[in-house]
Length: 57
Image (tube, rainbow, N blue to C red; front, side):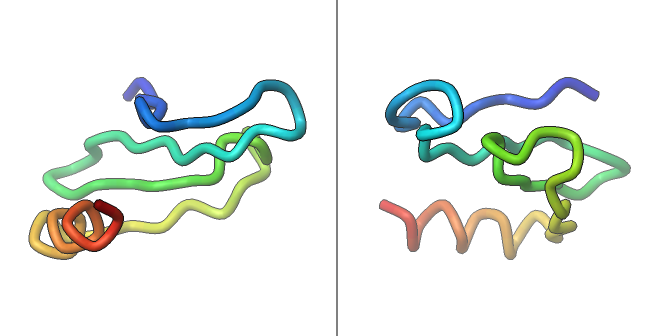
């Protein structure tokens, strides 16, 4: 399961503002990329992930 970085991510290194997502077991996982592996991972059902994307726009 590979993480995909948001196309709207800003900056680089530790000052970046970015979210990553991936598909896992029929759901979506979202994390803060600047925290890397220790980042908390949020597990979202497909409908909730779609709502998050709509809200973020």
